[in-house]
Image (cartoon, rainbow, N blue to C red; front, side, top):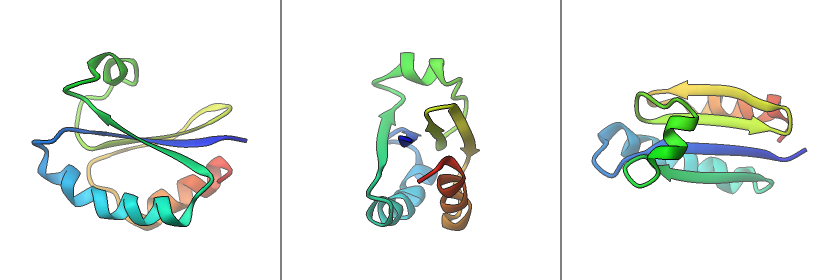
Length: 88
């Protein structure tokens, strides 16, 4: 089963910068997960498709669809649990 994490962010977003180191650690610990950064200023169509209204927003998906959505800075433990639930 493929698992992906989409990180919706913007360069001007302070909380997004706080989220980055947590995601970098997780990316190293979950090599099988596709981590994708989506700049909402450059990819508004993708942000609209996922109904992103606040930043940062993390969307974890697997082959069955969206497993979890986090809005705001999210702790590593919560993201890790959702990745495991998704099948990572």
